[in-house]
Image (cartoon, rainbow, N blue to C red; front, side):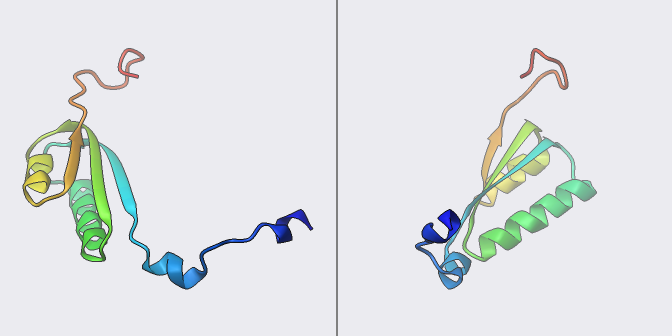
Length: 88
């Protein structure tokens, strides 16, 4: 009964047409491998549909620089050591 009292102000049509801000988090964006290629294709597809894409990586490189030049928001955390308690 309590669940029925909670109303959703947006119907499914509004939700489908509403642009999103999507953050994609990855560890490295140094060279173009399979994961990086898929990340780029996904990012480009989302942006082409009107969404804002933010790519956050622990360590950037050529791919992150290339994506930034293409207008993507790229956050390079420039982490020097990976997978240690001191990083977090």
